[in-house]
Length: 337
Ligand code: NAD
View 1: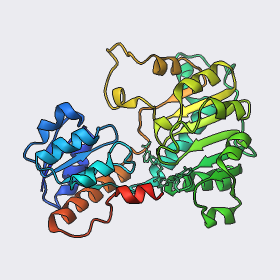
View 2: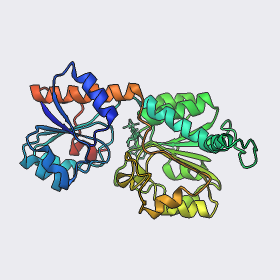
View 3: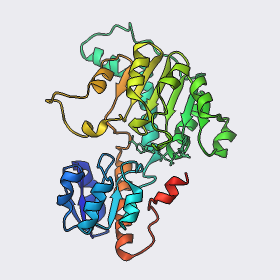
View 4: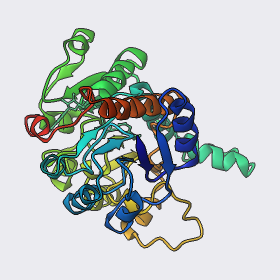
């Protein structure tokens, strides 16, 4: 199948090309992000392969369909950047990689939490300057603290398990469905409001939907425990950034670790070190000593990239052969969630 791979980085090129030995698709790697202005690059291709910040709204999908594109293959689990109803109307199948390596994201989440809480990133900056003073680096034990996990699917369940069994936290969870295995370990399901009110650490692992958009907003921050730590490796828009900044300025929010950001599409995955960043909210966020931000890299392990490449190319082969698409995302299924 002829596939236009948008937002392609060196690592996409490497892992997709290696895996493609077994599939034999015609892959064309394109650096630009897919959006209305870049749709013409997909002319002559049957499939587009995209990532988290490519924009597949109704307009882009209609243009793609007009050019003969019949399949969109997401190299990620989340699909909030695709208008699924429009894709269905236009006869475009959308496939994703539902579970490439939940361990990659769960482990990174814990790494971020520990770095932020124990100030490891700040300590490293000091040591490089031969400043070995410890003032300002006091952290807190994770052991015995109350951690709230919102969304206990593949990633959230691993995080909950590690916090409970590995660190000895009291773990609260909120999800639209319970995981009996976690309950057997002593994880307690509560409603989202109670979780946000009782937790000293809140970590987000639910998908971005209209219902979860700005799940952390001014009212939730007002009701949270003083000094609450918030970790988000899921999707940026789960948090209202302006409200988060107000919470940090007021000292109500004690620490924030983010791998995702609401307006990341204009920033992440590019080297902007010589540019003037226009996003004042993001720049303000970076000024706080108790905020740690990474640029959407929780998925970035060898194992995850291999699995993403394998599943994506398998889906394209299935589509080509007219086989059922195991990893298809359909609008009806999403509405029913
Ligand atoms: P999953 O589908 O296995 O789990 C999501 C869980 O959230 C499910 O248990 C679901 O029931 C629950 N949920 C849905 N709506 C909810 C709501 N309103 N309130 C509470 N819980 C709700 O997904 P996953 O593989 O664990 O991934 C979680 C998220 O992590 C994805 O949606 C994706 O956006 C994000 N992600 C980020 C990275 C990264 O690199 N930073 C990588 C992979 C995935």
